[in-house]
Image (cartoon, rainbow, N blue to C red):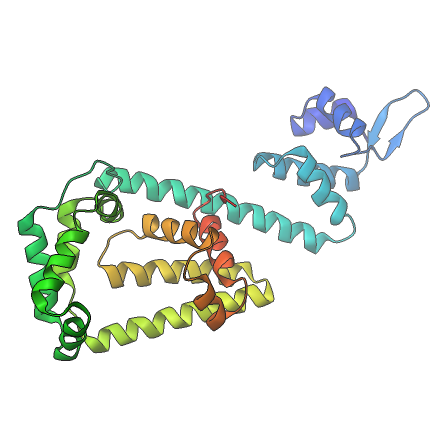
Length: 283
């Protein structure tokens, strides 16, 4: 058995703090002598080490108390809780690292730069060049002719909010134009990417069904890699966070997505993306 003073010297935790933990029923001593001295055995010290671990992760005392109460008789559950906390801290750091990377690369640029007529013409001409004859027929059916399609594209680029959003995702106007011109338009490649996205969403559905956090985080990572490849971008962080925000706020795609992959999947994916980047959910 160790006294409060000995435990304080051993762990670095103040005597007042240990007394406070006793008062709030977070850490009761193994025994209190007739003279009122608190004594701690090895089992109590083990519990204290677990509390110290959670405090290191800046978990509030109220939450630690709930965790410890739920897992008092199950060491495996305590380890699982510790693992989740470490993953949350890792994900938060991942988000900060990627944010710093964006700033260093100039990819967190928020100022608005309008796309000029030359930019718009370059993007439109390239889109038509790589487009199949079948797709051109669909466009003509929808717009009436190619010229009206060009006018519609140009009108879209006059939308300041849409352009600012595009620049935010790619980091600059130049990178957005470059990404468009790097697109191959290869039908086989697009089909492969579509199949990859389908597999990723099925992975999310499986993770949701089984409550598998590791599988969920792997799916977010795969989603980011797929988006980088599909949209020709260096970093998909901004795009994925925008997607998460959309999914968590009743996206128009919610009904169709949930019909295909299961009820609740959109909010599950949105929350998973936030957790991956260590961002607090807006829900």
